[in-house]
Image 1 (cartoon, rainbow, N blue to C red):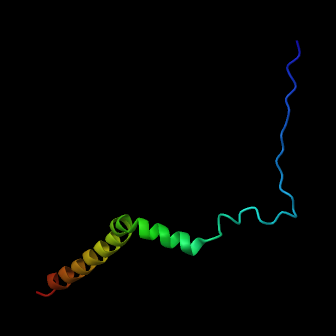
Image 2 (cartoon, rainbow, N blue to C red; image 1 turned 180 degrees about the vertical axis):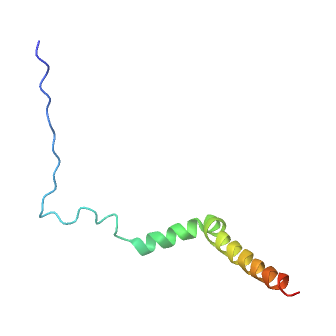
Image 3 (cartoon, rainbow, N blue to C red; image 1 turned 90 degrees about the vertical axis):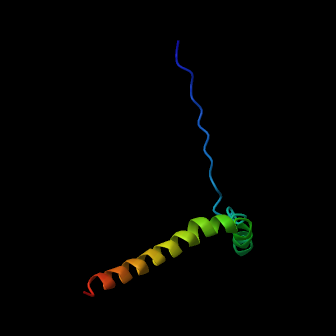
Length: 71
């Protein structure tokens, strides 16, 4: 018994169809503003918080380093 013949499906885009991904990039500023407004608490904890903590730690470390070499 011969194995069954496999069929192939090929999906292509027409070169004349230029608006394939327009919905994805349609309202980027409005979508970004809406996402930030909905998730500002998470953005504060996970984006702004670590940056502020890192700067605070670096300034504290530099101040301790200055005081350590003072005497």
